[in-house]
Amino acid sequence: MNLFFKLIGAGVSLGAGFVGTKLVNKGWEKATGNKPPLGNDDMESSLRSALTFELISAFVSTLIQVLASRGTQRAIARFAKTHDIV
Image 1: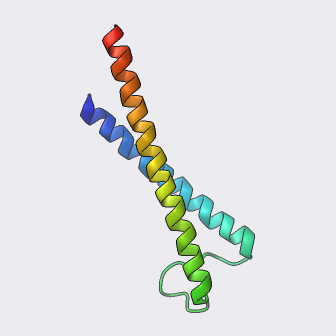
Image 2: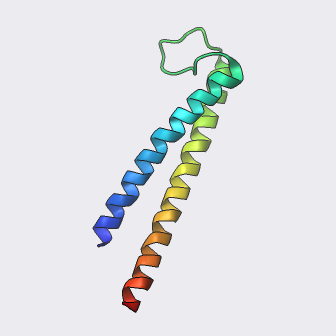
């Protein structure tokens, strides 16, 4: 069962990361009116906007990783507790 929970945790983390990336991109477009500065092909974006976008992206990514990890650990603990009762 431990492997199962690890796979579920990885899937939740990947899914949440995908959703988080989409939310950051849409939020950036809504706040600035410009597309997010992604990749090296966009030389029109300033260094300040690129760094700001990357800092926001890193913060959201770290937050998602921590929340997914904690949620998985809580689910494992809850399952172990109810499994022992039954």
